[in-house]
Length: 97
Image (tube, rainbow, N blue to C red):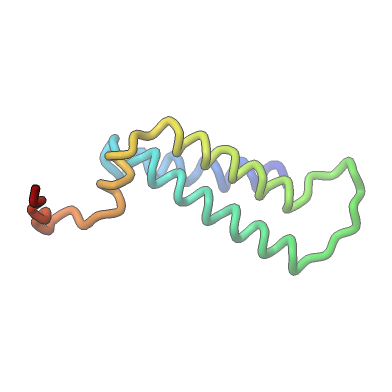
């Protein structure tokens, strides 16, 4: 389970570094980790595993994805996130006073 967590965290980070502009890496990585956390929560709800206490569960993975996603969002700047979520090629709307 720990290897799966490492792969699902490191692989998107490496791909984001190579495929995106440097200013868009942290917002994209943050969104991706929140999506992965959502999938881990859905899987944890569908797969009912008894609490063992010592094993890493899907709930732990969801918490780890969320924590790292929050850290990436905090370290990223808001204008980078807005740039990531808006259309890159379209004209910007004119602001009126």
